[in-house]
View 1 (tube, rainbow, N blue to C red):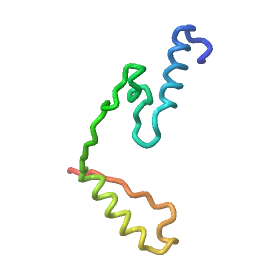
View 2 (cartoon, rainbow, N blue to C red; view 1 turned 180 degrees about the vertical axis):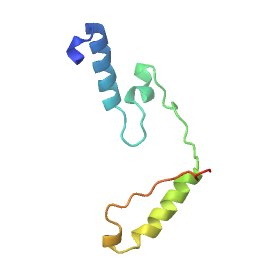
View 3 (cartoon, one colour; view 1 turned 90 degrees about the vertical axis):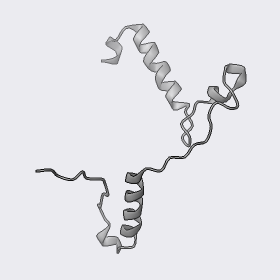
Length: 86
């Protein structure tokens, strides 16, 4: 399938794949964004905080679940489920 694409489209897809692989696994930025010799800046990003109520609830529940015996945790998935409206 991929080989049926135009050469230009294949080249773009490969370039995009390689670019995404170079992202930092910790923060998600690209090295060039910080490199001033490549048009980046040492101040490309500022640190910010955001607290998500959903993530807070999930983390709290996971902490509770982690105290259960292992046999009661196996295969357990914790997720947010919207209320059902009738």
